Amino acid sequence: MPTTITLVRADITTQQVDAVVNAANSSLLGGGGVDGAIHRAGGPAILEACRRLRDTAYPGGLPTGGAVATAAGLLPARHVIHVVGPVYRRDEDRSALLRSCYVEALRVADELEARTVAFPAVSAGAYGWPLADAARIAVTTVHETASSLTEARFVLFDDRALRAFESAH
Ligand code: ADP
Image (cartoon, rainbow, N blue to C red; front, side):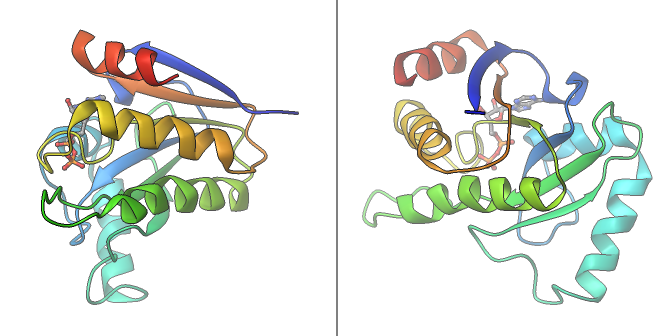
């Protein structure tokens, strides 16, 4: 079955999906934006799982463009898939790393047998990626990457982000 891409304006922590994607940072130990919201709403279980990952698989942190799953604590979702988006640089094309976040998140989602996944606009907040370009990369990458998802839901926090994704869709 093909993946349906849907766009909603909402807080990603409220989403009833199998997995939510977190725009984390390499430390996996929390931050602002989506990351802060997910840790606040999901409670300490997510941070504990992240700390275990740092102690075992990722002592140096999760690399940019990578993805790894933890439990979702108190969130309605079952899993959180943490990705590390690239910081935007005008003098360097880092779009392969942003694409990698979505490809790797889909790969992890398939491993988890997740069928519905909510994505934020990775890198489009504190990491400074221009919204229209972040939206285009997100939508085309999810569209072009084979997976077992039935729904890939982009969850946009404000009207500006929603409009950018509507234009890219
Ligand atoms: P990054 O560091 O990868 O740029 P941010 O979390 O700073 O990640 O921002 C990514 C996008 O997520 C921005 O468009 C921001 O407005 C949006 N955002 C922030 N909080 C939430 C939330 N609770 N749900 C959905 N999107 C959010």
